[in-house]
Amino acid sequence: MITMAKTANTDSDFFGFEELLTEQERNELARIREVLRSEIKPIANQAWDRAEFPFEAIETFAKLGIAGFQFPEYGDGSARRPLFNGFLSVELNKVDPSLAVASGVHTGLAMGSIYGGGDQRQRDRWMPDMVAWNKIGAFGLTEPEGGSDVAGGMRTTARREGDEWVLNGAKRWIGNGTFADLVVIWARDEADGSVKGFVVEKGMPGFQASKIEGKIALRSVQNADLSLENVRVPEDNRLQNIENFRDTAKVLAKTRGNVAWQALGVAVRAYELAREYAVTREQFGKPIGGFQLVQDLLVKMLGNITAMFGMVTRLAQKMADGTAGPDHAALAKSFTTTRMRECVSWARELFGGNGIVLDYEVAKFFADAEAVYSFEGSREMNTLIVGKSITGQSAFA
Image (cartoon, rainbow, N blue to C red; front, top):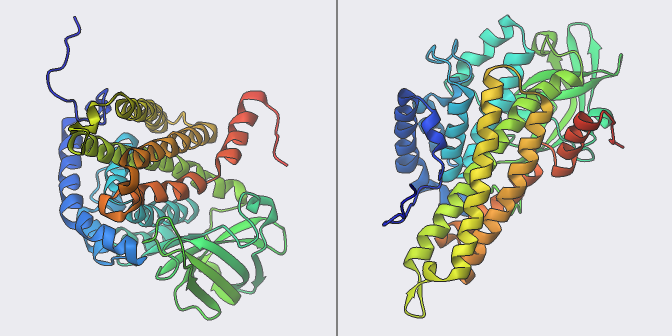
C-alpha cells in the first residue's frame, strides 16, 4: 500500500540510488561531503566571482586523497568502484563545478593519459607526485581552429630529431593550463601522420600559457591558450603506449562518462536550491512552493534528475564489468547534459529576478551548465557516435 507523505521529501536522490553503495562507501562519501562543505564551499563563490583559482583547494583535495581513487597502486591501495567515483563527482559539482572541473582535468584527463598512455617507467615517474597534488596536470587537445574535428584536422606538429621531439602549434581552452606542472600535449607526427602524446613540463623553452579572460562559465577554472614554438621534448616524455588518435579517444571515453555524472551534480544542486527557495520564499501570503506552476517546475526537474541517476548508475555498472563502450558514454553525456540544461533553466526561472545574482547561487550553476553542455564533445558529436553505433553508418562529415 502506498501511503501519503506527511512531511516534505527533501532528497534529490528520490529513488535512493545511493543505497547501491556499500555502507563503507556511503560512510566515506559522507566524510568527503562534510569536508567539501566546510572547506571548499566557503571559498567557492568569491573565487568564481573574481575568476580566480583558490589554490587552498588543492590542499583539501590532497588531504582527501581523491587523486588516487582510480589509481590504487599510487593511492591508498584501495580501488574505488566507478559507482563510488560517480557519486563523488556529484558531491564535487554540488559544491562548485569549477573546482570539480579543475580536479577532473588533473585526475581524469591528465593522469588518465599518463596512466593509460605511458609505460611503467613513466607512470612511476609522474603518478606519485600527481596523486599527492605536488604536480598538477593539464590536457592539451583542443586547438584554436579545431574542436570537434581535431582528430583529423590537428595542426600541432611533432618532428623527431635524434632523442628529442620538436613541437610546434597552439592549444586552446586548456583547463589548469596557466599553472600546470605537466601538460599532456597531443600532436601529429610529421613523419607518419599519427597523433602522439607528449608530456610538456612547465618551464620548457618555447612553451607559453596565457589565461583566457571574460568567461561567463566555470570562471574559477584557469583555461589557457597554449603556444608551442620549437619546444624540445625528450623521447622519454613521449607517452610510449600512444600509437594514434584511437588511443586518445580511449581516454576521452572514460572522462566523457565522468562528465555525465558532473551534469547530474549540477542539476541536483540547482534543484536543491530551487526547492529550498520554493518553501521559504513567500508571495501572496504563502510560500511559492504552494503554487501549482512552481510545483510543476520542481517535479519536472526531479524527473530529469531521476532519469539521469538511472543512466549514469547503469553506465558505472557497465564500466565496472568491462562492458561499457564509447557509445554508452556518448549517449550518457549527450542525454544528461541536455537534461541538466533544462533543470538549471527551470531553477533560474523559479527564482525570478533573484536568479541572476550570485547571492542566491543558482546563477552560477545556470552559467556553468553551458560549459558542461559544450565540452567533452558537443551534444551533436556525441549523437553521431551513438548514431553510428545503432545504424552501422557513419554520418561524420
